[in-house]
Length: 96
Image (cartoon, rainbow, N blue to C red; front, side):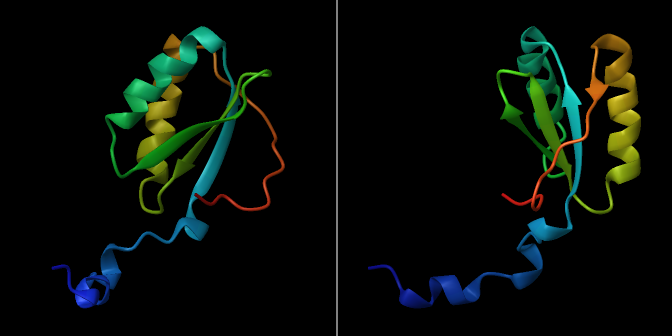
């Protein structure tokens, strides 16, 4: 039997504050989306990549606070391998 108290025992420090994520938007070729997704998933806990406009090829990379400098360096390196055009994108909030 599952206890109803299990939700109460969650460590609040482990809960992610998604409102504090920093978002970067890029236009990329469709053929590069999967490559970028696999590379960025390897940096688990640092970022979340999602497609915001599949037709236009626009992706969002939401970066956890504290990892912005590291992710900016990684994105700069990835930009040497894949064309990643920064784009402005209206997003009410960078939330998941």
